[in-house]
Image (cartoon, rainbow, N blue to C red):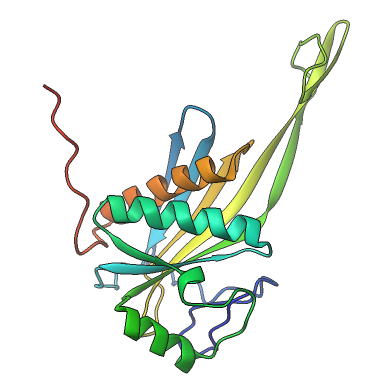
Length: 217
């Protein structure tokens, strides 16, 4: 998909070559589970404690192989980030999908837009688990039942998000996301945006943090 060559260690092709060096033994690891009204989203994140950057404007790049996924993901994430006081621009606004870019070309674009961070989102695969002891009798979608019990299938989509500074080498933050039984790409993308932003704020990576929630009267 989008490629920056090796100097910045920033973008990778969607063939999923190994993504950059793991940021050593000093990374801080946290695991959180966020549950919306429909789809649970899990996040395992780590931050490079040696990174001092605080981001004020993010270029979000969804590195998927289909435009029907790229567009809603980037729109939902950028829209939510902007609503929370974090300036954000979608890659579709300044890059041509599925074209390779050199470091120099991309750096010029990022500089002209004033972006100081790059958030990459990539697809890592889907896990399918089967429950053979549900004790359910029926034939609804997702269930195959019979007398005395049945079985159900659960899908877990795995994504990875990585945050890099736009003007130098170095990984700032990374998060592995799990989405259980996704049904609506826009809703899941919005939930993912909320999860990522909350973690970035918790790790003090935002120059202009979101405003506090309104007080209940």
